[in-house]
Image (cartoon, rainbow, N blue to C red; front, top):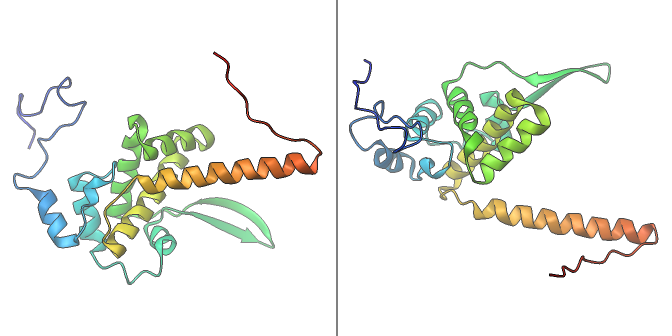
Length: 193
C-alpha cells in the first residue's frame, strides 16, 4: 500500500525520513521489553531494523561463542581462500540473511551521520571503497548488537572516544620511541597567536 500524499513528513521537517511505513503502535517500547535493551540507541538501527534483527537472531545470543563468530554467521566478515599457503582471494560470503541485509542498509545510511560510526564509514569508504565500507561498518554494528544483547548494557559512544584517545596515546609513545632509536627528540609545537 502506497502512502497517500501528505502522510510523510516534508523534507524540510525531517531529512528524507518517511515514517509512513512505521507500525501504528510503539514498536520501540515492545522491542525494549522483549530484548531488555534498546537497540535503537545505536545510530544506524531504526525500530524496523531492530525488529528484523530480533526476529532473525532472537534475544539469546549465548549460543554464539563471541562477536566474531556472530559476524561470521551473518556473513559480515572477510573469508580467505588459501591454497598452498597462498591467498587466492578474500571476500565476504554470500549469505541471505535478513538481519545482515538490514545491518548493511543501516550501515549505508551512516554516510551523513555526524558521530563515531559515520566517521568510521567515511574513513573506510575512502580507504576501501563503498561496498567494503558498508560491510566493515555492518560488521562493527554486529559487534555492538552482540555486546548489547549479551550484556544488556545500552549503547554508549563514550567507549569509542576512550578507545580513540588510547590509540592516540599509543601512537605518540610509538613515535617517541622511534625518534629515540634514531637519535632524535620530539617536542610539541607551541602555538603563537
